[in-house]
Length: 414
Ligand code: ASP
Image 1: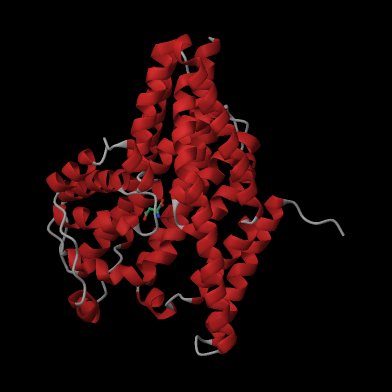
Image 2: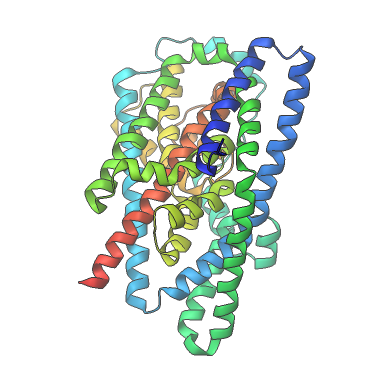
């Protein structure tokens, strides 16, 4: 019998992981086999994420620096920048609109009693974060000593430093050709290591999904059913209809081709709930399976993994309206517009790690006077919802790089 290829292995591993997780859930945590299985899954899944994180920083740094340096000529660089930012912004706007429309139509939380959640809210202390504080925190995190940024896995600061290096390489031209060459080779080398890590991806993904599925609180899902349905439905609508449609209209790439090419990245995002940890896989898929040029991939995808989060933006807006309904506050149009902007800012500012959206959500709630402690209600279900929104966050980066590749090259040829 022929051994299935890596793509198929990853898909099968994900399905098997969910099935075993459900079985564990059914057997209950008291069972010794389940305990041993969960322990082992924790170790294997953790190691897989460690490996991805190990390669993340070298990959982000070299790919952005080389990506920018290869874009040679200011005009093209400018075009890539603007196209990327406009596209990312546009898709996030649509995502938040979907959340607002669905929440206004279906009004999740309106029939629930806030008293049901009083205990959880009492034990939860939200980290206060006002808008000016958030901005200050965000801005002060941009320019960091590169060694500190590298050692602390600070992806955003590494992106910024790499941008500077890339631009300096372009300006210096021939003078820095050795350094340029060195960085190119380093990038090659890191991609090779990513290839090795991918070989154990099926195992890592299976382990992560076993643990995730086995430890979900099903009762909590049922009581928040309508909200969960809106978040999942809205996120899927964005991921299965809006993004593929935009992609098709702009580039002519069919949804099937995109999903096939991006499948490993989407499954990894689903299992890890981290766009950052998934980044090495996303870059590999976009370049190798979807044929986007390395310069574009190297710039658009890492930037997208840090700032472009459609799923998170949608979630933040839906959660704010849900909590408003729950505590019986009617948000007027102006307040909903505030939620609209804050959800976008909160998504841009959220790092690509599990449950990051929950931290920045405090700011969205506070901006319209909602109690930050209400986040405690969402905590038990967040990890599960994070799977789908992270997958859509990553899909947005994949679609963005295909769109930028097409639009920039069209400009070059015309
Ligand atoms: N987990 C998400 C991501 O990495 C961020 C979030 O919590 O919304 O993309």
